[in-house]
Length: 329
Image (cartoon, rainbow, N blue to C red; front, side):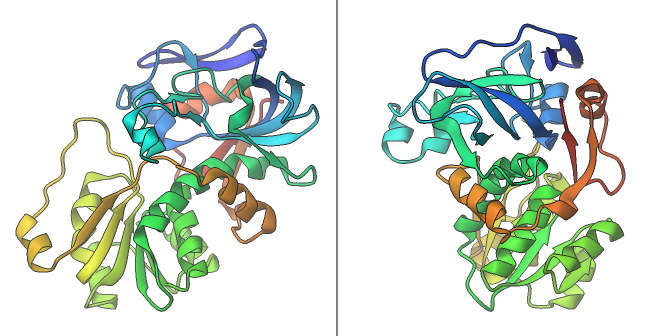
């Protein structure tokens, strides 16, 4: 079968590899759709830790073609929760499974979904309906991560929410904030993404910190940073009103630092949270996509074959792109 593998930092190729054989407790999935995440580009550049010589792809779904576990039968459409916690370290025992010291992530530490077939633990599979658009299952993982961050934000009806970044996480956060009853503004330089955010529920859209502050002079109750850029992480607290909350969902390269003014955060009592992975949110994400509460169709910018995946990961996304989906079949 074909698989897109990160052979080493800066070297990603689509090559022929054997079809994996599932072990006890695992399933084999024929991959239908796998999303290209910004983390995949960080992995390619060596900016995010991973195991060498692995097939990437941690946002995917497909059809079970072999099962070594009675909980999942052949023919079931599933989405993969990529994070496999150890359940025995101190973090897991305290319910902080996303901080697990021994997490083995599919598509990062073990072979993932940029392939025609993928084997992974059956207990990390979430069943999807057979009539769901196959491409939609690839959004369950990013939505699960976004839900963890918006859960931290504790958005209340009527609160003002600023979402920074018009990528897939930002546009999912816009929808979640609207479902929570928030009044939402998006900050992104892309006019195309501003227009899309308005269609998905944002009442305001602008391109910069300065213009956002002109629209909401007192700031927002909640600021959710989804761009993963040092500049936007630095100005996120400045867009929060006094007593407001800031949640950082965006991922910066390891080692990069951001200037923050502690006096300002102290004097205005700004609460800052950092959100990591998807603890206990993947099944909820799948349900929200299946029910249509979250609209993922407009977030699909393009689809591509597995042979095109390596080049797409090794290069920046196309202008205005939200999510590119690899369709291996």
